[in-house]
Image (cartoon, rainbow, N blue to C red; front, side, top):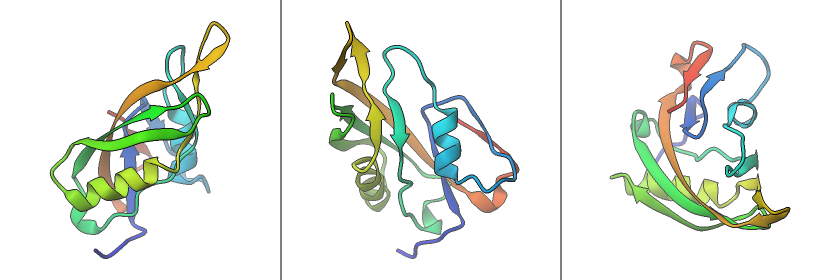
Length: 131
């Protein structure tokens, strides 16, 4: 599958992603836009899956556990019909790092379901809707 730099991934864990015409990467913008709050692991490092133009418009849901160390484990595709997109998404999420959820002052492992929708970044106008 041919990789392309013209693809962006909407990593659906937040609200609206305001993207100014700045030097910010999509990963940096995503980190700033993620939903934050009690009971939600906060991503601190993300890697976008490398996908091809045939994946534009596709969605895959990845399930994983954010461990007490902030690393991901048990990363697997929960739904999605494209095997190569699922593989790319799983490989990327394995590299993510989080601030784990805290309960009573101690980090706890948390299960996460993350929908990932592939978009064509050439068509992004500055506002990306997050599902």
